[in-house]
Image (cartoon, rainbow, N blue to C red; front, top):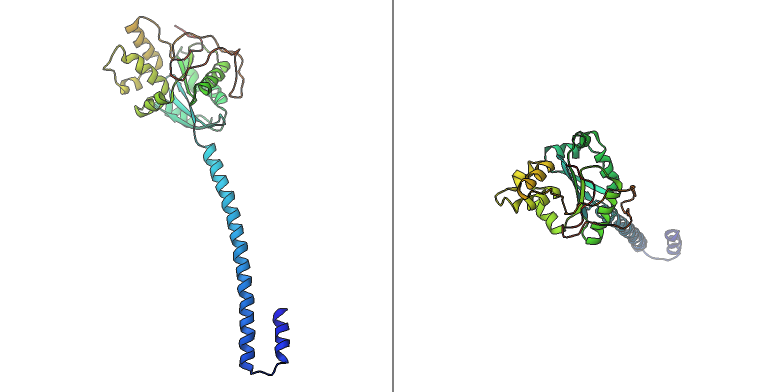
Length: 266
């Protein structure tokens, strides 16, 4: 050891014991200081590596759990699914009493949005309404016209249920719907109904079913109301991967007036 070598070397030098002791202590202190510096550097490198790992994990977590698209389902239960950039459902929000109950009971988080829609529409809670002839309105906001169209096509390719209507909505309208406490589907009906009844309020619309809204609009216009306009065709085979196509025909437009898809019932 270094200290032993120093001790032996000093042993042959005729110097005062106190000087020898101080010299040994100084050398020992210097060696210990270098060891501490080395340990600090190792710890610093380890801490930096850990910081990078934790930062990357935090960024990944944030990306996964941040909704960038939205999909609304309105029957009587009114729901909005928050969807991440990987087409996975990461949040479920209810907009009325039935919607809140369904959001709490539905185990659809971390599913693809097409699987989530399929699970919801085939659940006993929703079938209570659809078996009775209730309308189902699916409203999609994909942040861009192309993504919105892709999502509308993917949903409609999975479902051809009578009374289902699927269309796209712009981000601006989706944000306005939330500010009024309305689901996206009911917000679209609210805008249509307001053309005939300027005094109608968002609270009134929130308490109505989609069928009620459709019938109210028809009582003014004399025509059936189809969310998004048009009458579209029935859905085909489900793609199952969130990016399904159906012969390339039709996608909801980003401005909220896009093609309507799905069969309708009177």
